[in-house]
Length: 148
Image 1 (cartoon, helix red, strand yellow):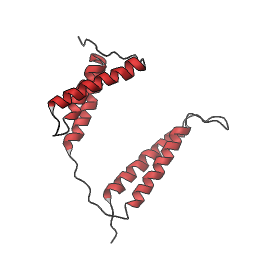
Image 2 (cartoon, helix red, strand yellow):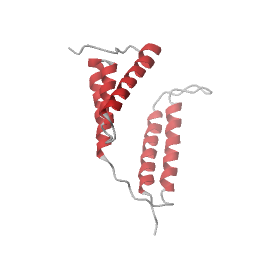
Image 3 (cartoon, helix red, strand yellow):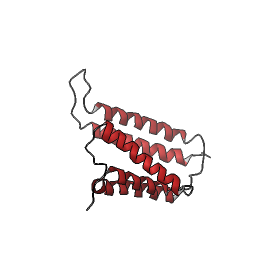
Image 4 (cartoon, helix red, strand yellow):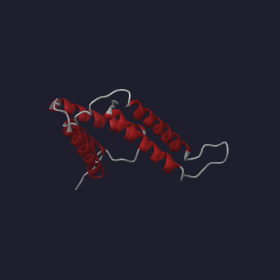
């Protein structure tokens, strides 16, 4: 009887499919003259590498067997809600409030999160991103904006 690790099989097939899609999409990008790297080289190369690695992972799944892990829905929903919160808040309230809301909602994915630690982390993330993206890189994003 063949034993199969379903986690590796499903994961390998998913990586191979995404890599193949990137490789096929990169074929439509313009080519460069001989001896030069064109705009389609990196996506095609990354797609090809991902396709190969995905196939290797999927084939290795036949060496061992393991049960597919139970999926906890709380962290999954928290991450999706955090991303949606950032997208909804960043234009109307600015970068800092969007990051504070995003960090707070993402932290709800863990039952071990503590309010004081989450508040400190949210403020630290907002300040760190402000320093990196607005101060250091000079991106045209407002840190605070009046939504009204």
